[in-house]
Amino acid sequence: MLKVAFICVHNSCRSQIAEALCKHLASDVFEAYSAGTETKPQINQDAVRLMKQLYGIDMEKTQHSKLLSDIPPVDIVITMGCNVECPFLPCKYREDWGLDDPTGKSDEEFIKTISSIEQKIYELKIKIGSLN
Image (tube, rainbow, N blue to C red; front, side, top):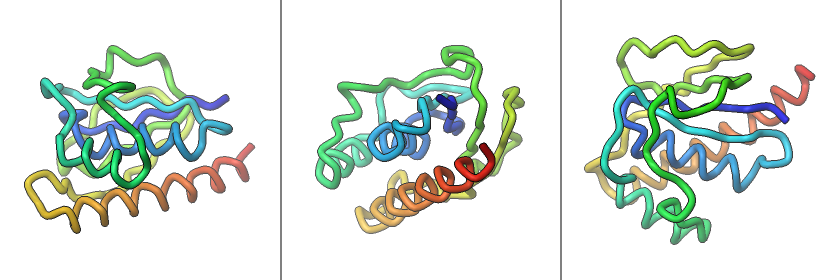
C-alpha cells in the first residue's frame, strides 16, 4: 500500500478534504495523510459541513490538523498549491495540484475545489497504478 501525503500550509482545508476523499475513494491503493507546516485549531467548518453534506464524511471525527513531523514517511507527496515554498518531504513521487484556497468564499467555490480534488484523486490512482 502506497502512503500519500497531502500538504498545505495550515492543514485545515484543501489538504484535509484531499485526505478524507482519498480515504473514501482510493483506500484500495493509498494510505492517506495530510499535514501542514503550521496548524489551525480546527478544520475549516465550511469544508466539514460540505464534506458531510456531499459524501457523508465527518472529517472532525476522523481527522485533525497535523504537522509534517506528525505523519509517517510517505511514497507520494501532493502539494495543494499554496503559493509558498513547499517544504521538502522525502518521497518517490511529487505533484503540485495548484488549487486556490476556498476559505472565506461561497459554497459554490468550495464545491468546485472539492470536485477538483475528487477528480485529481481518480487521476492519481490511474497514474500511480500505471507506474507500478
